[in-house]
Image 1 (cartoon, rainbow, N blue to C red):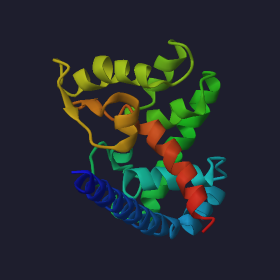
Image 2: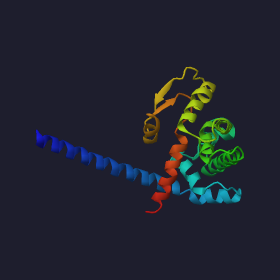
Image 3: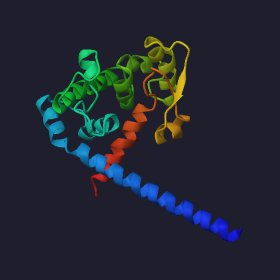
Length: 204
């Protein structure tokens, strides 16, 4: 029996190591894909005299599409009101940087933290006013309340219906629960994690 448990533990350890190695490989490859757009991001920032952080833009790209879409920053809806209307990467970056920059300026004007502006990239700019009126700092609890009471009902979910979102950040911060049509309450945390991940990966 003891030998069986030893073998079981060893097998689980090997599987765990293999899964971690696979995740690291896939993550590294995805970040390499995203980093191919650094020059374009840098040029758009310069051409528009934008003060948005370059690595923050790349983190948003990684969070949104991992570089596997022409609409890299999923910025079509903020541009035209419909999804997938942007069909080239540079236009997506230009629009995404515009929205992110406006959010950051608004956050500064309202004296709220920068991560509120990042969360507003997912929720919409009105979230910045909401945070300003409710403590001035983005939190999971505040984002969850806004998602349930504002975003979800505006898109048809008036019953507070939820679904399971399988993502490590979501599991760590809130058990992976999201409201249907309510946006992603973990969005700013994911971008923040990816921001540090990109900076780390570029060292290798």
